[in-house]
Amino acid sequence: MRYFLLFITSFILLHVQQSTQDDLLKLKVKKSYIERKLVRNAEHLVQNSANLVNLTKVIQDHIENINALLSPGGLSVDKYISCRRKQMEGQSGVKLMKSLVDIIVREEKYFGIITTDTHNMKQCFQDKAKSYEEMAKTYDRTACRRHDPNALRREIHQLTNQIRTLYYVIEAQTQSVFEKKLFMQISSELEKLIPAE
Image (cartoon, rainbow, N blue to C red; front, side):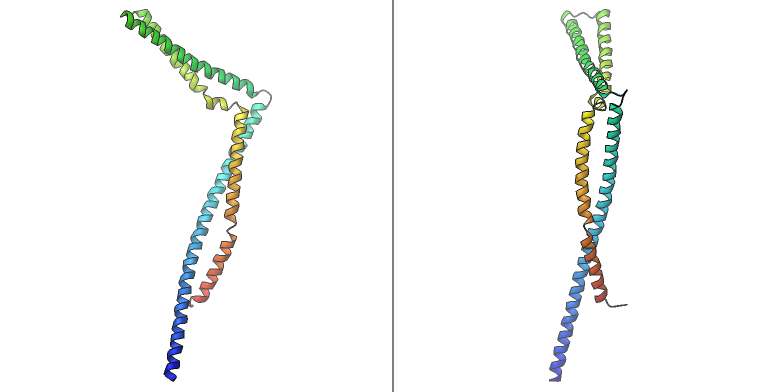
């Protein structure tokens, strides 16, 4: 009878020890998982906060640009119209000069004669085409947008939407307080289970 009781006691102790080890392993795995998740959350939080600061700075710059453009002496509409005119002049000029060069080349091929005058004219039109091309590049759509308050307002609208989304993301990440509490609770339970050295 005594041996039987001893066997039962040993079996129970072994089972308790095994159960404790299993619990310990599960807690360690859970702690490691939550720890990694908290680190990732912290990294994302830092990155998104930096993005938020950058976007806010861009919006401030746009607002300053709009104020400057709409202030007396900085009337944007005139500058925008002037920019668009030069852009169209450059694009039309390139097409016209290239057409004139093509006409001269066709005439030279048709008659089989290349004179100094036609050569000089062709060179002149090619040079003018390059000049108009430079004008079109200088006053391209991006350059004209700088003088267009409506374009800046649209950009601000898009940026504010991005900021709103980022705020929601950051808010969700800062709600990891529950995970932090759980992490502390698991750490506490682990300390109880792990025997003191």
